[in-house]
Image (cartoon, rainbow, N blue to C red; front, side, top):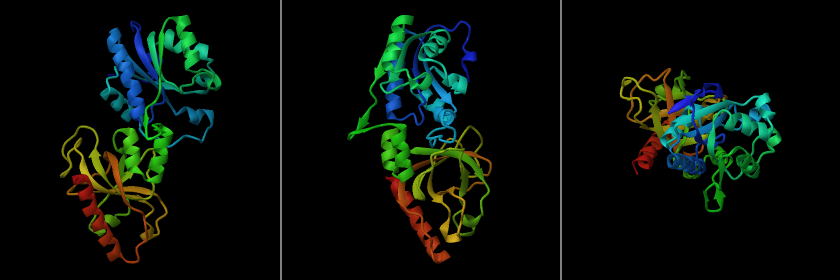
Length: 319
């Protein structure tokens, strides 16, 4: 799959394509339906399937400081899009100038002149252009003018809930990882680099990897979770941990109230693992909430609870 960081990277001999557009944060089941529709349309036409997304999140430019919690990094979005069959992943820098484009200029300058769209596949709630004035109906009118088709797709959902990034963020914020996974089509993932912590886990017999996530990452509610731990990227085996292979993990999110902590952390105890992971880029996939975060009166009580967490993690993930 080709990855473009701007439309300046579009080749001079670029032909026509089927394009789907959106932020696609999470690449959830609704997004997957949209992307798959574009991939099938592209195959039928014999042209590439392209996906256009934006960085930073549009809300950060429209209302600075209001960046919503991020469900997926751009790299992860590209990986998921590629798994769905996308040929080209294009990231458009969302700037103040870009925000001021009228719907007509947006379509003419980006979609027609640069991307040479034969068809555009968008969600039925998609808006674009200055003050979000463009709608699916607007896109269809412009498609008739410039000679491309438009497919407006109703996003999927279940149990009267439409799958959306906003809904999934609410599930993650509440610690409801089962509901988040149902909408995502997979467990919610937090990526980050393993950094040095206080070392208390090692002293207690449960050495943890302290994962520092990127800014704006969607972190689940405080508590203990069962999940999977993966060292990302190719490389040699680190201790007993092989990059790319997931391992069971008991994951703690919170401020470590037993030790009167103030900084909120994500710490993963890798079951049956033995490795020095400092500096490694890792992923933590949250599967199930086990218990809330609480303050223990003694270290023995804390260690006993951590032992139960490990046993329950093994039971949850083993099933």
